[in-house]
Each structure stands twice: as C-alpha cells, then as structure tokens.
Length: 427
Image (cartoon, rainbow, N blue to C red; front, side, top):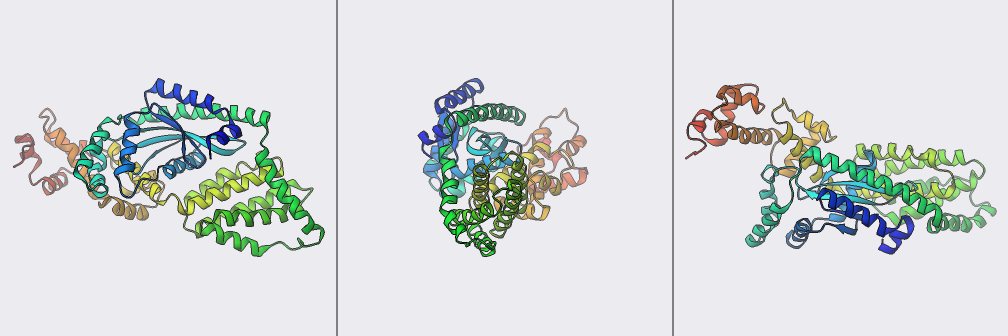
C-alpha cells in the first residue's frame, strides 16, 4: 500500500505520525507505523535499533522477513484483545497495536525493538554463528546488539498498554474520517460485482447452490492462492446475496457458514488449529456489527486473506516467537517447580509438540536447557558466601540438593563446594 492511499482510506497520516513521535520521545523507545502489508510507513526515533535491523538485513542468510514478523504480531494482537508482545527471529522484543477502520485492519503501531532478556540468556552467540560467516561482521553485529536497550518485562507490558490506547484513539479518529470522506473503493467493488451477476440471475442461472465452488474455494485457500480464492468467494457471495435479497439475517447466517468453510480450508493447508479457532472467535464476534452487504463482503474478504496468510506466511516467524517466549518464561521462573507442561501451556502448545519444536529450534531438550539456566544462576549465588550452600539448590529450583550437586558436577566438572572454594576459578 502506498503512503497516499494509506492516509486517504483511514486517517490523516501526518497526524498519526505526530502521535507516534510523541510516544517515542516520551518513552525513549523506537516505534514505527506499518501498513496492511507489513511495510514501514513511518519510523520514529531511528537510531541504534534501525542500525541493528539494517545490519541483520545486510549480513544474515537467509534474511529476516521483517514485514511478515510485524504482520504476524498484528494478527496475533487481533486475537488477544488488540495488543501483543512478540519476538522477532533475532530474539528482539516488539509490541504492536493494530489500527482498524470499520473493523478492517489498516495498519499498526509497533514499538521496539528492545531486549527483554539479557543477551547471554537467549543463545545469541549460537544464532550469530549459524547465520553470519564473516568474523568481522559478527563483531560488528554484536556491537550493535550492545546498543539495544534492555527493558524489564513489566515495563514492556506498560509500553504495550500505552501503544494500545494510542491505536484505539487512532481507530476512533479513523472512523470519523471514514464517515466524512466515504470509502468509495470498498463501496464500489461489491456493487459492481453484483451488477455483473444480475443478468445471470434473470436468466435463471443461479438456481442451485454452487457446492462445487466451495470445493474450489477450499483448494485455493489451502494452496495460498489469494486471487483465485477471492474470485470464487465473490461467486459464492453473489449466489447468497441474490437468493436472500430481503433477508439480511439469513445472509449473515450463510456467511458464517463460509467462515467455517474457510477455517477448514486453512487447516487443510497446514495452519494450526488453535490459531484458526482463535481467529474464528474474533471474527464471528464482529457479525452483529455488520449492517449491509458491502460491510459483510469486506469482512469475509479480510477473513479469507488472514486464513490464507496463516497457511504459508508465518511458520518460521511463529516458531521463533514461541521459542523466545518459552525462553523468557523459563528465565523468569526457573526458581519455581517448572515443568515442560507449564511452559507448553504458556505458549499455547501441546507438551509433545512444544518439546519437539524446542529441540528443533535450539538443539536442546527442554529439561537440559532448564538445568543449564539453573546451574548458571547457581554459579552467581555460590560466589556469595553469605548464602548457605544448602540453600542454593532450592533457590535455583532444584528440589533435592543431591540432584543439584550431580547436575552441577556433570556440567562444570566440579562440585558446588569446590566451585565456592575457588570462587569460580575452575581449572
């Protein structure tokens, strides 16, 4: 979407750019605006963060798909109440709040990047070594990483809430702009299509529901063909509209059946069931706010695009986000009685699938990673002789001191007591 169209459809671009400037200057955190394709329309407080992202794009193989990263975050925000905190494939934290007009996603405010996890805590060296071959480029990249601000999770949550309030204000102002300027582009398309279908209706060509079109629609969605899916969806809508001309409630009911159809198509294409069901609930709750055929047509087209995107566009982005969320949660709760099931529940996955995904993405079994975190934390406590040795195992989450000692020796080659005696100077 070009900048001119982005502004004309929804709101005055200069105004919302000013708002995001205020946000960045007040918080000291970089932020930007994206359009409905994920492209950056405006960037506030550019600096070390933008240098970092430019270094990623210049030096990494394969490149990080930043547009899809931020679209993924925006789509998740639609599911989770209008705001979402997420990690890019490099482990940097962002937060997003979609801007909507007439229940249609038009773009989003995005905050970040920041680090919510200390650099040594999320395997950054392993990531760099895997994706940057040149040693000088690695050093430069790590230097940029040092410039990224570290922000505590509770502060990130507050920053996300503020951005959500800003987006809500933008949405209310965009609605006023929509009413005053009209939305000619959206008004024209459904009317033009229905007009073209009128002769077919008059000739009695729309007597039977086109069940074959449903199968064709499923096929197009499951292979990610948005243009083909939209064409077939228009044909099905044309039939529904013409055969229920004086019954808008009936049209909405049939349209909800189409949402179920699109859901099934997306899942057949490989989209995850939980995500699709979550989007379903979000969209079906909007039905009561649809008042005419134009709004309903645009609503269904939006769902089609979202479900098709879920099939192909976000797999790598989604996996990285899940892994970093799991790592952040583990690093914040390692001292508790933490299980794989607890972390899987936190990232909305089944334990078996999460276990497999964590191993594939990090090279670690989850239990091995958790023990690594606990042992590293215990080292910092061991050099403090004011803390009794017997207490340290409990402080880092081990229920039995004997097991703690066994794991510590396996990982370090020495016992916790010897580590304390040498103040961590292991030979």
